Amino acid sequence: MKLARTLAGLATIAVLSACGGTEADEVAGAGDAPALPEAGQTPAELTPEDAEEQAEVELSPRGNVVVEVGEEVPIAAEGDTATATMTVDAIEVDAPCDPAYGTVEAPENGHFVRLDIRAATAPVTGPPSEVSRPTISDSRFSFIGPDGVTFNGSLGTYAAFGCLPDERKLPSELGPGQQFAGSILLDVPAPTGTLIMSDYFGTSGWEWAF
View 1: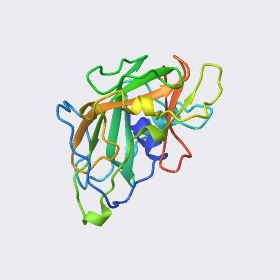
View 2: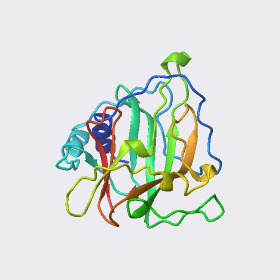
View 3: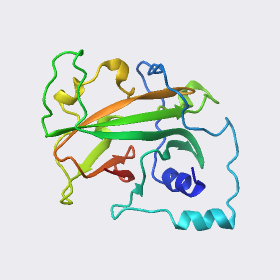
View 4: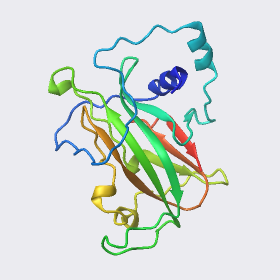
């Protein structure tokens, strides 16, 4: 992953403080998760080459970092050091439901889109109260159709929620020092378009075209 991408992504994210609730369980079969800095690592000083790369980072008209499938992005940080990263490995349009899981329903908005995601979080280096717990959930995503119009409805419909068994879903809250692999299913109105994952404040983030 290019340093420019990392720094641009870090500029758009917010670190979430620890809160009540049960820590998300690690998903089995995570495989090779995105690499993270070692605990306490000091960010390297930018070189002229790094600065040149950073200037070339592609931003959308909405101010989001444009990301390709298979590209790692930071989703939480302490200063300039990433403490959590995620990679969308695949985007499957009209993804089928698991027929063995409950009642298979048709998408409410028109099309199920499944994101296969890997994520990793840095280990704890301070008191529990300072541990960040990043979230990746359907509520963080929005959709822009091929006509350029932003969809106003919810992507996390009841039909999408009941489409996959829990063991295939990505945990919404990522505990520290773990690796995760799973899927998020979104219910969108068109088979092509742009998915946006916003930061915690909903002001900027990342975009994947499909």
